[in-house]
Image (cartoon, rainbow, N blue to C red; front, side, top):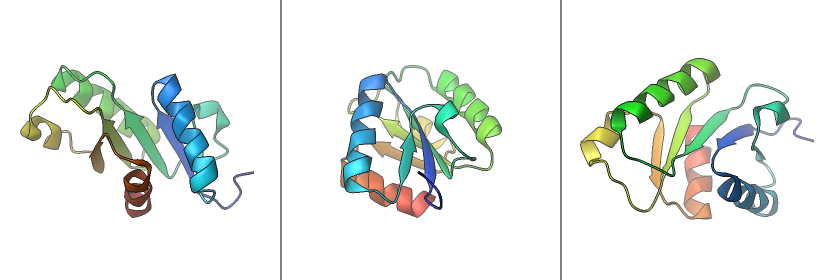
Length: 116
């Protein structure tokens, strides 16, 4: 049950999502991570969007705006892959609440505690 615990929606490729979900259940029981909108019992305190393919900044920007509009006022945290094809300025222009590149579990937990 997620009563009283922050609910986070993770938008990610299936394997990554399932892996992170297991890590959160074991290593951060105070956070409830959902992989599907239908699992939420209320508005999420944070939306995490994992990008596995980063080629066109304008497409990412459009999708980010759609997520922000739909999930407002929840902040968006973007997880970037190890190799990023966009330059630093393009990433910073996205304007989301957080960007992490290939974070380990500890770094992700710390970022969540700061943003949510």
